[in-house]
Image (cartoon, rainbow, N blue to C red; front, side, top):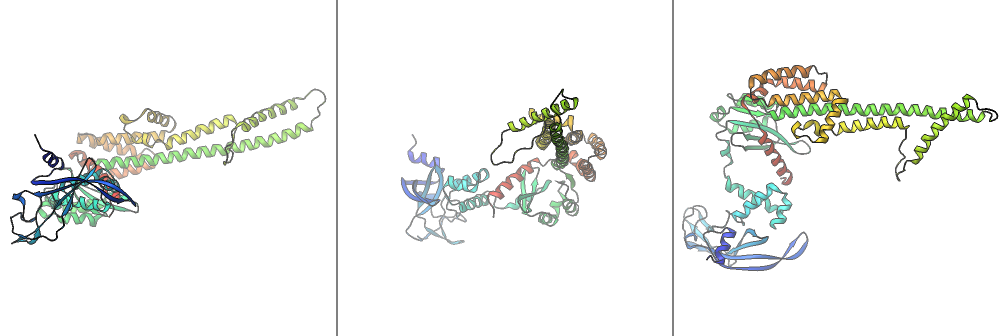
Length: 481
């Protein structure tokens, strides 16, 4: 049957050590300006005899030199059910023939860090999932220490980052804004190994050229595909540094261009709907102002008529008109008045219905961005109904939506010959549709036609790099330098 100490060693992931003593300690701790009592688990241990008096660099047995002081050194281990765990050991210094006087190697330390390897790994993983403040609160460490733990784990896992630059064949280049004020980073992604190989602040030809110069002549000739958006600086560096590479405009960015053009059409259509509403409202306002003037004149004329004898046809006509105006007056007085707000302008019921319909249409178009951007198989019932309204009421916007969907289906084709035919037909249709944003999109795709077809031929897809960019942006926001 396993002893309690051996179980504790396995739980905390301690190897090649002897546990001499463990105890629960209540320690006053200050955090966020408040002092409270915190329970901690203190473990006093030592390395096994075979791992004592070893050099931390070469790992060889060395003679002891001295004890720097009589105090115990401590290391922080992973929490045990939320309880902080501290390891204590009186570390001595050894004298290595090659590396001089150094503190002896201890198997639970992560290099020169005051934290164990498991603790640094936990902090590095949590940093990908939550904010820096949340990690510091959960692990009960200073928020500055979070960055140090991440760096220690990274240096141990990947001490030489330049290894990623070897053996590149298909790369994707993208610039990403991570903060307001035109703060960009350039990311180079290896599409074969699905990993980031290079990141640098800012973007442009000079930045990407720095990456290209890191590669040897032989490594540059091995690059087969360079994917990215339609930036000219990518084209320039590809021609200059990668003579055997095929330039591809990533399909993700082409669809993004189409969505931006479609959104411009939607914005213009919504503005047109608002103008129609304002124009009709002004028309009704003038018409009802004329009606009010006629009412005043009718009251004056009716008051001047004699009340004796049989009423004339003119009198009956005036009374019917004033009765109709009185119905609207009662309707206006019955509307609830909200405190602190100006009373809402009222119109005749038939006029108000027309204005409400125009206002609802403008609202539907304004909120149709996601309905137009989603794939047909991912749309909700409400988005489908909104598309039917657009199809019946705004043919120009629906035409732009059809062009966007057609382009998306063309880019998903596997047959490159069919893709050439369909893309050329699409360019012709979009150029003659009469919608300026879609015509500009057709010209842009025509300029990048060959590079887009290269993406279809070689299936150069950088979707994973885009998701990686999102992770990098979140880390840049959470952990600004």
